[in-house]
Length: 457
Ligand SMILES: Cc1cc2nc3c(=O)[nH]c(=O)nc-3n(C[C@H](O)[C@H](O)[C@H](O)COP(=O)(O)O)c2cc1C
Image 1: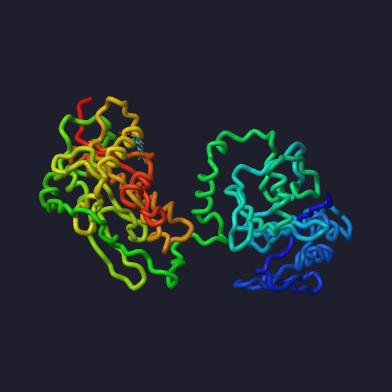
Image 2: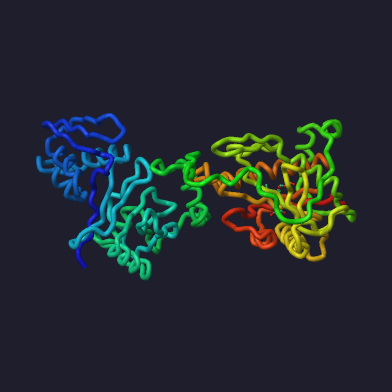
């Protein structure tokens, strides 16, 4: 097999490279020109070689060393590569004698391939790496690498061979190139304990939803504005029988409430339940205090609402459902909480699934078969497209953060009311999807919270 080399070059943001003697000026898109003077003319020759198709690191070193002192030339070239990487001005290409195999774009400033050669022994694709289609091309990415390789058909075949059978990565091989780019790891290497704890999806979501990749938009970009309308703040009424909840008297709550400090000191997760069930009035007050709608702002762009808890962008993508096992005044069933009208909508034929949702809560809470199960599980669902319509790259993160905020308020209100609260870290989104007939891309359950009356012990 022929040599595969990694070529270094300026990326498309470098519009021109001008040279006068030892003075070099880079014209950079959306930036003032970057000028600098090299100490030795041959170093400037190597830098000039970064325009066009670029050059391998060893040929850059060779060019820079034309005037003598290869060690100094190599140091100078690495210094300039570091500076250019700092400004995200570089791109790379993997190519063999037949032509390109893939091009590499940096996601973040400072990203650079490793300069050395892979260690001896078999190399394999890093467990954080994956291939997908993006912008109409096949790309190799990884939660652990701040660059992306756009692979062509030949590059993909080479990657497939490597994926099927780990192999040594001799210098000037496709595997060596991918190792230098950060996508391969040594099969025999022992992964540090802290890194072992990070699963593929955890690292990818973390890396992609923070501002760790400055070439990737993360934040309120409104990318669908003008493309299609945001789902409305008020979810269209769900089909089912409507049950109005009692009006809540804020004055009475204010009188009866303990101080925040006292509630906080008393707050505990409670997993033992009393013989008597929670009442419809208590559940109604709980929902009113946690998640009723307190304000609505119409906007030509995206309408927003307020609730008692803070929410990213005030978009309030969360919806609340009750899975009732037992409750005085409410039949066992799944109900949607109409946060705008303080009412419940009973979903038809939902009794069996209500029981399953509560059972599932009991499992999350480690309850034994004979233990009394929670009376009610509140299911928090996310209408993610509402949030993603504004927030790019971080919508799911933001929705989970919002659910965490809701958990805390649920704990505080339940404690103040003398109810038994317990958050659930695991749950099955399919149960709500099935019973409510949800399109999981439109709305999906992301968290559950168990409630009941506290029992002894
Ligand atoms: C995000 C989150 C998820 C949780 N998941 C569970 C769970 O699945 N099962 C459970 O029994 N408790 C769960 N809890 C409750 C914690 O176990 C509890 O808060 C912790 O042990 C501290 O006890 P305390 O709440 O009584 O202070 C969860 C709490 C939070 C905040």
